Image (tube, rainbow, N blue to C red; front, side, top):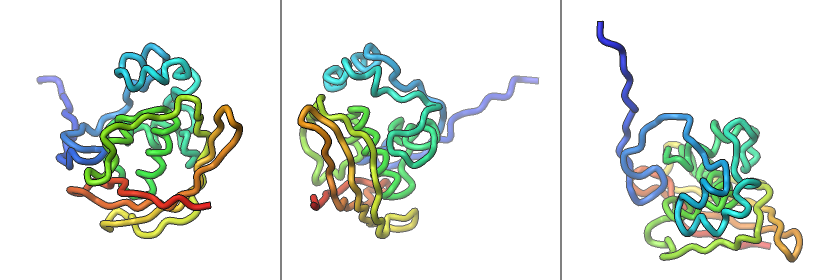
Length: 184
């Protein structure tokens, strides 16, 4: 009898937002674990190589978004290409991408009409934790949603926070960050 083989469950989604293109639903993925791993991702990631060893997330460690799950079961699969099921999940994965310096994911998850041509992150700013205050819409069967949050960080100037209400919409079925309004 021939050996049983399995093939990935391919799903076609929009290449315009995170999860776009043919994405295999497989796990685990080899996440960056060292400065050398980050440098191999290209010039944008090289800026973060010096802090990569402290920023890289072990699959079994808590996710940077602090939802309470391990990285491999929380934001990790989304950063690896799985579509976000809700606007809140996309928001949390984008925070994690900021914390890890993953500009590629940030751009892929940005709506094509508002996506910047270039995204440069401050290598001295370390995103520490995320608080979600309110979620409106953004469910699995909705087309738009908002997420109000505060993202806490530390940089050479000390501790800081960013309070924002972000708007999300779907493009070809995939959630995308549209824009945000900065609050107090």
